[in-house]
Amino acid sequence: MTTTQLPIELFDHVANFLALPDFASLTRVSKAWHQIWTRHLWRSIHVRHDDHLEPFNTPEAIKSRLQHGNYIRALHLCDFSMVEQIMLDNNIRLHTLDLLDTSRTLGLYKSQPDILFQILQKSPSLVTLKLAECPLEYERFLCTIIESLPQLKTLDVLDAEMAQIPKLKDEIVKTFLANAPSTIEYIQMAVLFHDSEDLETMSEPWLSKYYGKTTDHPALTVVSFNGHMGDRVPLVLSEDFLRSAPQLRMIEFLQENSPRTDWVTSGALHHTIQRATSRSLKMLSSPSLKNFWDKDIAQHITAGQGIRDDEIQRWYSLNLKGCTNAGSATSQAIVNTCKEDLTELTIVGCEAMGSQDLQAILGSAVHLRLLEASLIGDYVESCPKLLAQDMLLSTWACRWLRTLSVEIGGIPRPDIKEDQHGEPIPEGHPMHSGTDEESHVIQRRIYRQLGSLRVGSTVLMGCRRCEYLGWGGCITESILQIMTGCGGPGAG
Image (cartoon, rainbow, N blue to C red):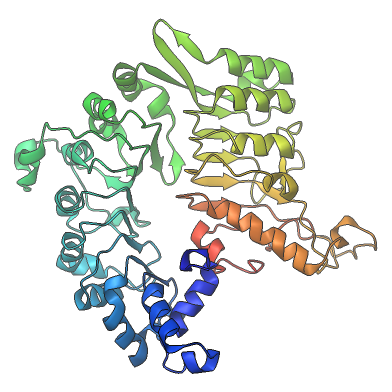
């Protein structure tokens, strides 16, 4: 078995304790095996919580890290000071730097920005960069990416405190996008714009160096901004940039995590996309369809796409909330016509839509970013539910899914003796079928399906006590937390 085949939980535990001097004797393995595995297990370090730091700070672990640190390729850490220590101690060819879970960072790389820039400048092989806070010197940070990270594929810069995001001028963001590394596939940035548009007041000399230039981005698929952008939106995404990224299908603007789809489907940006790509991205809202039959809704969806006057018309957002008749015909129309470009789908209240219909959509809509199938916090009987037996039949195509709101059922829970009302569950009830181990196996497979999402950030699952995953109430968890068992009870 190679290290990549180890479950992440086992990998972390082995990586933590393998460096201890008595490990080899306790497990009766050979000294050579211990030496080989020690250096390979240092390739990826996962420390997501403070209580996981201690094993890495022991004298034995520090000695082992100094000895084998040149094997480190990935850092997933909650403590920026640990990044500094590792990078300064070793000559590392880092591929992944993930600081999204920064419970101990507390603005450290904001207060000491030079350290972050030194790390980036000595990491030309970096492929993935994820930060939970925007560096104070945001312009310098963007310039460093352009000049020092030629192999970067994923950039994820979030900041929960919008008021603390350094403000940028739209020309800065526009220039960065146009000159981002040619290998880039995914860009997610927290953004606040200055009110002034006076380019002459720019303090960063790099702007004049790159202004007006455009790099080809053949692999770029997602561009997502989170912040307050207002009328700057059409100024940031230029026609030249859109033409440089032929695979770009997911253009997203979030304000307080709510998507502003109308910026893409209407207005100045919509026309810019039309001119640059010959594609017209459309939004369908449910009020006009609420009283339609299933086949009529399906026909409307099918007829809404096609080529008209040399222009490709595509559904970008479908809101079918409250369309009680929407069922298998509607889902099949979505599967047949919305394999590409559809990024948002709301099917809350589509009571005729079944589990297999949900799975078919998840298995076909490649560019889906948001799927809302249930109302979390206010259970609605008519919401479609995804059954485990269907969910596990095939892998999902929507690997870029950001938000999933769905109820997952069909999981045996023989350990639960009472229903959501506190009433005893009678003998012979389907919930008592199977064993605890079978239930755990199914849950692990479900988490593995969720873990296949490349950038998933939010999973919302309604939980009636005796029917679903067994997590009390509703959850908002990162995909990584779910996969590492740090998200909450029931993960095992």
